[in-house]
Amino acid sequence: MNNKLFVGNLSFSVKDSDLQDLFAQFGEVTSAKVITDRDTGRPRGFAFVEMGSQAAAESAIKGLNGKDVDGRQIAVSVSQPKPPRSNNRY
Image (cartoon, rainbow, N blue to C red; front, side):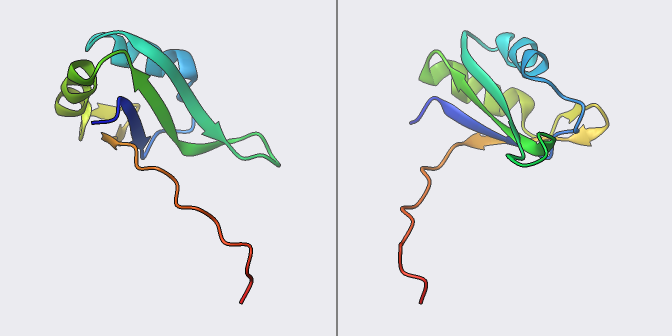
């Protein structure tokens, strides 16, 4: 299993440090990044968190998936690799 987690349905007020603190209760957090719109810089409502071990990642999923954070029920799952993009437009 991948140690990188997808965190969805986040409140737009959640910061990287908030995620770091939230996930730290389940183990070492290697990185926590709220994804922002490249044009406006505003949060897009999701993030990626990388845990230090597979056990910590599994524990975080069990402990946080469906939990209420800032009035929103967050979704936590294993991050799936981004599919390769095609250069063909047709």
